[in-house]
Each structure stands twice: as structure tokens, then as C-alpha cells.
Amino acid sequence: MLKFHSFGKRLACRLGAGLLAAGFVLPAMAEYPADRPVQFVSPYAAGGANDYLTRLMARYMGEEMHANVIVDNKSGANGMIGAATVVKSKPDGYTILMGNSATHGTNPTLYKKQPYDASKDFTPVAMVASVPIVMVVNAGLGINNVQELLQYGKTHRLSFGSSGVGGTGHLTGEAFKAASGLDMVHVPYKGDSPAVTDAMGGQVDLAFVGTASATTQQSSGRIKILAVAHPGRTRALPDVPTMAEAGFPGLEFSQWYALFAPAGTPEAVVQKLNAANKVALANPEVQKSLDSQSAEGTYRTPDQLRDFYQSEIKRFGDWIKKLNLSAE
Image (cartoon, rainbow, N blue to C red; front, side, top):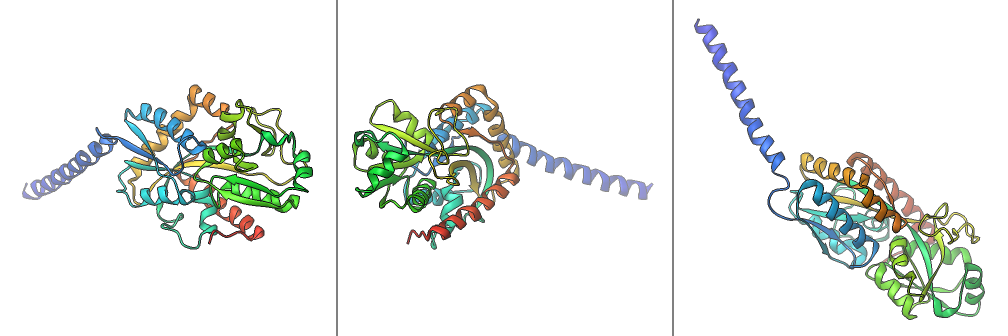
């Protein structure tokens, strides 16, 4: 009896410990997000593609998680200021970065010194969308297509704006410059929106920006979209030719957007955010909003996102080396 009693006592203790552990774990998982706001950081200025998608996902992911998700724009240094803010935050799921093809694509090669390591200091959460780069021109120049731009560029030095040094728009502009042989100078901005604004005002002749930023201003009549750097024409811009159709095959660049948390964020929190992202991307209203910006919603698991952005670092790195670009 003594032996049975000891075994039963040990079993009860083990069961009790297991239940106690479960008691601590399950509420912790259920508590996120607790009664406090979740902050989505957009590392670019308000009005651009990054800002648009950040606000879109904040709304619909917030609804799915029954959480108050707010957006904080922290622009500058080609997204590195906002990204660094997230890296330094507590890894608890309450500060999330809307990273992109600059913060986790071009920057690792373009900048020798960064305030973070894109490969190690973040936890991949979820893919959101990709947006093709378009070439826009100031309408006052009277240029209607790429061929007319080439003719104009033979006798004029051109300036082109982008969201910042090393962004996908900058890379597209430099690739076009090399392929066309035009004399072009780059003017970096803190986001797509101010680059488009200055193209409208004539402060720069051209801008290479995400489709979202261009389409929102197209109706003003002050800019004209000449080409899209995409394998095929887009639903949002069916009348705009691709770069290949305009005579420049191989110039295919898109801005992609994905959510990242600080390294060390609990797996349960990451999975909850990823699940909310998956539901949001399947929402017809979200799909409609993405279509209006010629953006393609793309779901990926955290592991799939990790593989994707690591491959993008290499792909963009190869282009940067080929074009001999440097931000320093």
C-alpha cells in the first residue's frame, strides 16, 4: 500500500504540475492581444504604398483579432529608422513592422552599416502583398510614351525621384538608366508619395514608384504613367505597357510588403498574427482594395516568408553589384 500510495502521490503531483503549467500557458496565449493597442509601424511617409497597406491590414487584422491596431509612420533612411524602432521594442507582439523590399531586400547589400541585421533581428510574421513599380513622368513635358522619353532625354538631362536610396524604385530607375543610356540623376525622397508630388510639380522629371502612389494621383492630369516594371500588364493599369513592351526586357521590379516582429517574439503570438493576416487577405473587401492598387495579396507562413526574403536579399544584391550602386 505504501508503494502504491507513493506512486499515486507522484502521479498526482505530475498531473498537478502539468495542469498548473497549462493554466499558465493557455491564459497567456488567450490574452494576446490584451486590452492595449497593437502598433503597426510604417517606415515611410503617410500617403505611399507602405502606408496604404499598413492601414489596410491594421484595420482588417485588428477586426479579426478584436484588437485596436494603430499605425505609426516613422520615415527616413530608406525605412531603417522605423525598422530600428521595432527592433528595439519589446518582443511581445505589440510593435510590428510593415517591412518591405527595401528594409529586407536591398538595404542589406546597399548599406554597409545598418542599425540592425535584417536576417537575425526580426521574426518573420506574414507576407502581405507585392506592388509593381511604375515609371511616371511630369505631364507638362508632353511625353506620352517611353520612346518619346528617350528622344527627349537625348537633349535634356533628366532627374528621377524614388522612395529613397536603395529602394526598389531607385533600383528600377538605375537599371533603366543603364539600359537606356540616358543622363539621369537620382533624387531620393522619404517615401513614394513625396516623390510623386514633386513629379507632379515638376521638381523632378520622372519618378519610379509603387503603383498605389501613382494611381491615386493619375486623375489629377499632372502625371502620366509610361510603363510598369512587371512581367505582364496589370488589372489596375491595363492600358499601360510593360517595360519589356517598351523595349526594355528584364526590368521587372516590385515592391513587396510583409510584417515582421522583433526577434524573440513568442511563437504563439506570431501564429496568431499570421492567422489574422490569412483571414484578412481572403476578405473580399481587402482583395478589392488590393486590386485597386494593382497589388497582389500573397499569403505565406512565417517560415515561407523567411525563405522568400532571404532569397530576395540575394537577388537584389546581385542587381546592386551589377549596377555598382552604393548608399555610402
